[in-house]
Length: 87
Image (cartoon, rainbow, N blue to C red; front, side, top):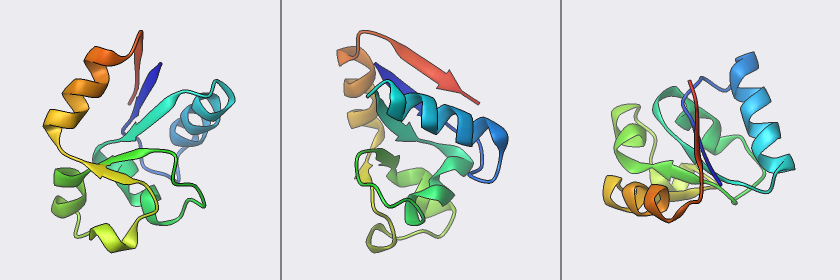
């Protein structure tokens, strides 16, 4: 299962989605404002969309997750048995 999370890290939606994904041992990809969490999480078991990072001035050496491009995101989505979006 793949969770796509786009809510800002200080929101209830982000915290709920991230915890649920971790509890389910699902893959996680941070999109849009969720990429702001990528530098604050003590975890590297998630993906971060590179273009979203660049638009927000976040460099790859500032994050703990795995930066990916749109092509890799499409691969992850097609490989997953289910894709869940939290916005």
